[in-house]
Length: 200
Image (cartoon, rainbow, N blue to C red):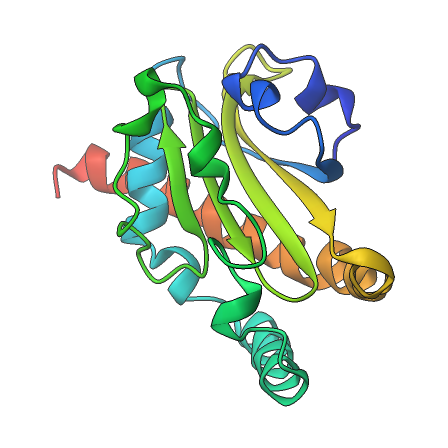
């Protein structure tokens, strides 16, 4: 479910310290019925067990295949456009207490590079010729008295090209990618619960 920006900006997460020059593009929630305040690592493990970003629904895989093909054709994904080349990695902004919370190699099939992980936050980034993007997963109280996963996407568009790109892909994000991602991740939570109940 799509949420207002305040569902992200009003939470006391560490990410706010490092992204003042980024724009908040999307905030989305994922239902995790029965979850408690300490279940964020359990949810992340459920996502990894379900295949993470590497196992998407066919429509989402198709959209990403088209995106990668366009990137190859137009040069959006050349090494010179990425982290450490065109843009400074967000990891370089971190204070010492966050630098060793995750290894940069822990990608798990995702195009995103890990930045840091805490008991209620998981942050990843990517950069190409269109944007420098950050995906923030946060663990927050839900309306039913439990806890839920929230995803915020923050971007720094690369000039007019980046802004046009973000505007073009917005309908695909909101109508296809995020709803299907929600079904995948919410199913991962439910199936984790079933496995726990059966002792498997």
